[in-house]
Image (cartoon, rainbow, N blue to C red; front, side, top):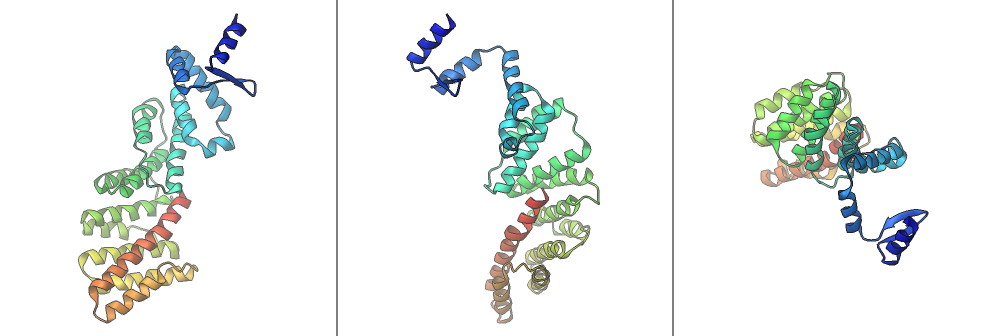
Length: 276
């Protein structure tokens, strides 16, 4: 009887057989049948999917798939793991997409059913801060980075990144004195860190209208990047020097801003992604 019904479904172009598997021709039919299943059966299906792919190389390349199926399987420890991986993957891809759905699911489901370690929560708040910053929601980025800072040890590599992002967020909000505090808290360990800090100081002084001081810090950043063999925005920096010394302050400021943006996108952001 089952075989007869199966043949009927195939003849009516509802099902087909591929590699010894039954495949629904119309995804809407599959969805209707899926929704008609009891919740326990659905949960078991998703659990089997997660058990089959979790920890595999394929799962590393498709963390969102594992995240969603883990949620439906109520395997919240795995959902947490692959939710974080999904957020980091999206950052690496640099699409500019803000994954609010992932954050909502983590906040509303995962964190209510799975106890996350404090240091891991620090990592999560850091990611929330980065996405808020990229979305230009600086009030939220400040809130998230403050929480991340409380949960992050000073010896952690992210300590400096959090302070740097806090300073940038405060600059964008116009709270320059607060920005200075977090810039001073950064522990300079190498030329790259020093360059990031000097670029941010330069941007801060631009906001204060202290263009000469801004130029000094941008030059310092340029020299530090050269030591590492990184020639980012060197032409723009030289151009800003010339414009400044010839009295074209407005054009000089524009060139400095362009250099700061290029330096941030090409150096600071890529180093952040590598750290993730």
